[in-house]
View 1 (cartoon, helix red, strand yellow):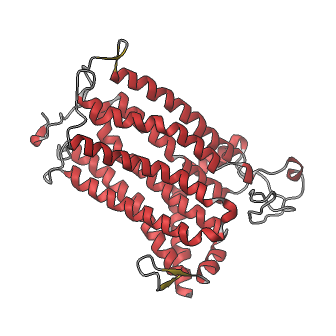
View 2 (cartoon, rainbow, N blue to C red; view 1 turned 30 degrees about the horizontal axis):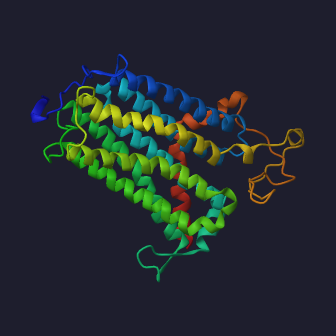
View 3 (cartoon, one colour; view 1 turned 45 degrees about the vertical axis):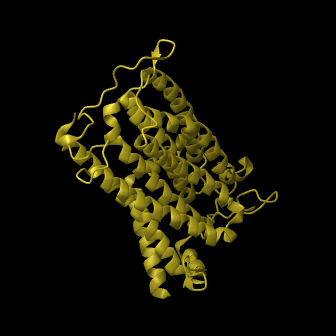
Length: 365
């Protein structure tokens, strides 16, 4: 029994449980399967991010792609640690949402770069648009107001999830969280509701943005990129709801082979670890490095800085514009690219830059 009446112990340990496969308990079987899946996911995703880092011809877009792809290994590693060290589950669970929020925001800004590569061109592009309102299709909103609404709707997600993740850690340390209870006296239900609302607002904003803008960026295959992202987020949310229902109706209970910790944490996290393997393959397909690769012969020609554009060379394949000589800017082994990607100040400056651009566009409008 935990503190303040919570049925979950303050310190969670996975002990007991009969043989599940051979002489292995479910806990040890879970660690083996999830560990193997984690190794595969890390090789696939960091391999893709490494290729983008070493073939970084367009830093603005490719850094954002690395942030989007990073959601998968982040989910995977935090889930695997939670399986191996059940007591860490409550402290780490909220931070998976933070990485998801950063990835969602980066995805929105990546779509904006597809539409217009520079701040000036973004201002001109959105100023020329009129977009149907979601709840009143007969009424229209100017493109700058639509961008501003979408930007704030998505930006609030990483901010809210960071606040709730820290609050989850603090309330757990003060014995006021209680993962196993939905009683209003504990913070679990309130933080869950807050995160769910934030997620719904951000995901809805992204979908509306895609629906209204898809016709302007067909050559970038935005649907494939959106599906790769949405499947990850959607499956995790769906599974959380499903496990809440199963636990609430007492369909899923501890048994001779499954402990309480296996049911509450081990099984849900194992499913996440396993499903991230095929989702990693989908992300490899959705965010290839080929559009950013420069032919070997072009690298020796004089550099002429030009904006990246997507043109169909064989129907709908993304390529660099013919005659525009560029060079890779990731540095040796992509170290400069990795440094830029890992620099939290870079993400903060990107947010400030986007805010200034939207504010200027609104003022001009």
